[in-house]
Amino acid sequence: MKYSLKLLLTELAILIASLFCVFIFRINYNVYLAILFFVSLALYFIFKPDIRKERFYTEIILVILVSIMFYFAFTYLLGFFWGVYYTTYSKTFLGICRNVFTTLIMVLAIENIRSVLIKNSVYQKTIIYITPVVCTLLEIPSLVNLELYTSTVDLFNVSLTLFLPCIVKNIVLTFILYKSDFRCTILYQLLFLLPNYFVPVFPNLGDFFYIVINVVFPVLVLMMVVNVTSKNATKIENSRELTYRKVLLRVSMTFMILFILVVLYLTSNMFRFSALAIGSPSMAKTINKGDMVIIDKSAKDIKVKDVIAFEEQGRVIVHRVISIDDLNDIRLYQTKGDANPTKDGWKVNDNTLVGKVVLRIRWLGWPTVKLSELLQK
Image 1 (spheres, helix red, strand yellow):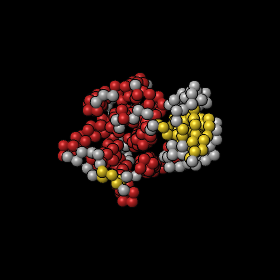
Image 2 (tube, one colour):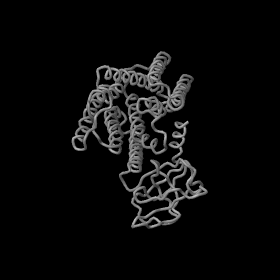
Image 3 (cartoon, helix red, strand yellow):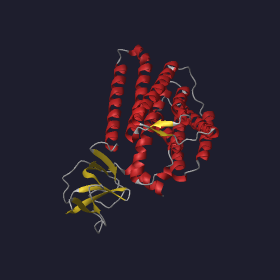
Image 4 (cartoon, helix red, strand yellow):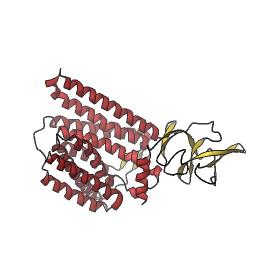
């Protein structure tokens, strides 16, 4: 029990330290990698992972190899139809070596930390549940330079295009490690990342399909791994435990898929409805800072007193319509924030109109807003 508590406290310390390194200190990436490597090494000697022969190691390796090859074949096939864009990675010999080396350090360090945490926490489920979050935070500096994303809208978009696929991937990798060992997760990471440094072009799928493919793909890998590892369930085929496991897995997968589909629908900007986190108190009491609103982009019957979303100087603003004017067949909307003393110094037209706010969800936008404010500081 004391050992499990010590391991849990260590994981929480890593979680807090990673938050400070990423969002507060914003240390140099090379320095961050060095710290990550030495922390990983120290944890390995302090909590040496439980090394045992894994029954499904070979089968899981085969699943990973086939899945990764299918992923690249499928995405590049789509690139023939939708187009490609040239890589931004250096194609010089030194540039490729530098990218490969930093990726190796990052992958080995993170997967060693994941292995130490998972392989020593068989009876501590809390550690298993927190581990994907910790590993996602440890990967963030390699995903994006957060200093480039300071507005709420930009951060919301980058959260979906990068962080959502990353957290889903880390959930899957944690399950794979739980069922096998760190060699499987290292292979998955390297096969997925290293080809990017050698190929000259990438499929230009757009943000929406990028999110779909990079969220659905790990889920499919998870389903195949579950199918492979379920062979050991033959011993308890008719037991209540097996029935409980099957029901729990199906319910969890159903909710996970439904949640992902809803998030993709609301954030893709390709469908009628979209979601927006409110980062300003200008509509206080009606729509508070930290709320999330659902916008109907196809709404045509906009009237006075309706709340609309529109673009102004690169930002999406949510204010109330206080008057409507028609000028040479162009409809202009005068807007004002409910908490603002004066009306806006502009008028919204159909070109800048995003849509009509049809639903307010309290507090759901707070994580995005707080993260944006933290980055601005």
